[in-house]
Length: 81
Image (cartoon, rainbow, N blue to C red):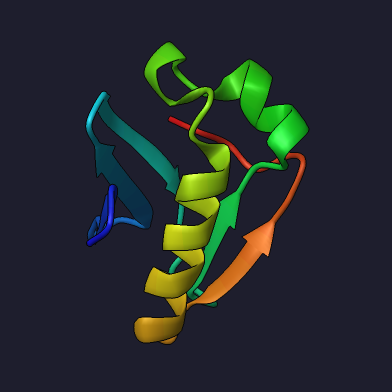
């Protein structure tokens, strides 16, 4: 069982919902790719409830991307909304 659920938005975002709340990651629709900030960037960008959850989100997002045939990228300038 996974801790987080991922739901694509119609306009290109990816909702990540977990025990502490919900955040939105980048999911551009031109070349379907989910972007996750680096662990270092995550520490300053993520909401408080998610700050210590980077490794779990990374693992589960990577699995979700594989299952849904979506590219997965870790990028220092990826945004969290």
